[in-house]
Length: 299
Image 1 (cartoon, one colour):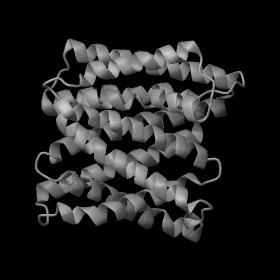
Image 2 (cartoon, rainbow, N blue to C red; image 1 turned 90 degrees about the horizontal axis):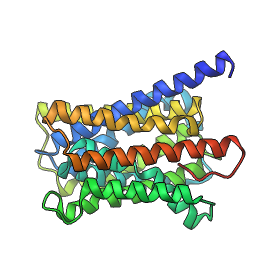
Image 3 (tube, rainbow, N blue to C red; image 1 turned 180 degrees about the vertical axis):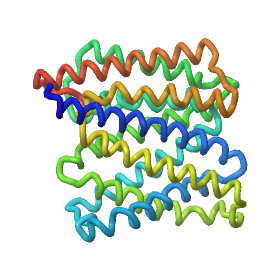
């Protein structure tokens, strides 16, 4: 690897790590503000912030080129999927600690691999099937469906992961023909539109200064995080970046300890470690498959 390419890759990794820190702060902020504000209001503000920021910062430079697309219907579907994911994730984090919630999100690449095998008929080796199973076992250890800790709410993060996996598969297909900033713009606009339609159901008046500050922080972290993510993948291949996504679990555990004084128990810790090991191993296998020109599944 030449120095210029190596520097570009390292910058991509730095952008990715910074993005995961933003997402951990976002989830922590949502958990805090969700204790006294409706989730529909939180989701609305998060998407409104992104739509306004994109329109104000990017549209003047890109002009009408930012709006150009050959697949408007796919953008609408992608935006609706991410809005669903955001709503489910914001609900989920109200019922479980931030660190454990983030670990559940990290099973998404394994679900993507499963869906790619079922829907796209991509070849998955027995070892990678074993990693999928291990990741799901880890997820069950974290959420413990039917336990008194979560009960029915344990289904929320699992449903969110399924929706997020479908979103990622759609995204990977659209990036072949669509501009990343255009995708980011439409995602924010669709999410803001859906949230605006639904927010009257939960609107109780203008938030006070403290709540407004937290809502602004959530919107800022979500917008900056997704922008950094785009910049990261523009500088380094997904196979290189994927293992570093799991740094978000560390940031989330740190935020959970710092803000909520929460330390996971041994069962949850075992589940988190199992998810990390299986996820990183799957990412490494995908990277090797890509380097040997095989047909890797999207992990």
